[in-house]
Length: 329
Image 1 (tube, rainbow, N blue to C red):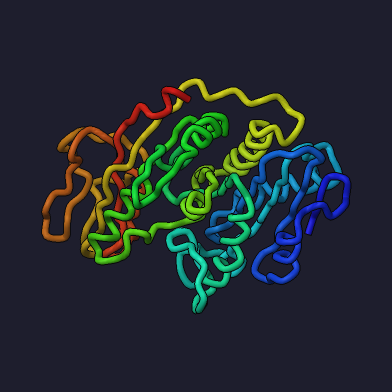
Image 2 (image 1 turned 60 degrees about the vertical axis):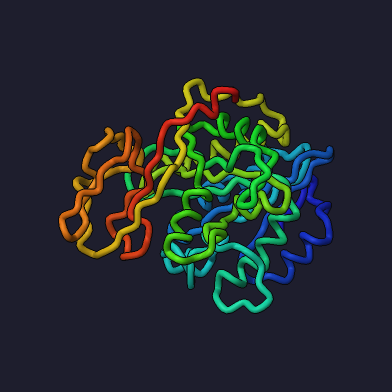
């Protein structure tokens, strides 16, 4: 385990015990001299999404040997969160860690064992930056949590904090509405409304806040730089390093997921090779069911996360609309 900028073990006993007992993943912790936020950055929650890993690996020697130094708060870096999936160059080990994240008294799957270590680590921090990538072509974007609310699904009170960081990560598009939309799809399939709980969703249940940054397509050579700059911008924004505060993005596109459409049969097919955030007009054909039934856009909006390899009963694509949420940020 790596420690504070002066080389001494200054982090608390809970984190030290965690690092000594787990064999699932390694952590690197750096603590500043002054009080400040407790930030955790995750890479490779999905094993085939490695740009967070590359960015953290680039950052580590700079924190150990200079020129970067944590001056306030505590930074915890997890280069590879799901080692089994990462070593096998696939998305998951036994299941999707980022759809059903919670501690369990009777771990059965590999991701259960990760969750039993990761969830206490998340709870020991205040802010999360989770670095991902996606399979279809498209520009980087950030996933926001809900606006402040007292609802039963995802009550929250740190929306302004998330918005302020989202506009400073260095990307020009933000998306929200994930858990509401995913939960409606899960309920329709007969599953739990809480299925869809990932790292940021869990972070919010324990009083923290956080963002998921989708750094680009899996093989986009620019994505490692997107991830690296996002970490630096986060550290500067939170005043954890001596660096100028990043300026907010001038023109930020804000989209809200409104529905998920499942694939019902292997014969369901798209009308074209959709990319995430391709715009569609009301009534435009998105695809066809195996029996020839048209699947059309319900209104003007955007196709998001299209997956032509989806299995029957799984998400085929999401639909999003523009939203004015970030105007105040």
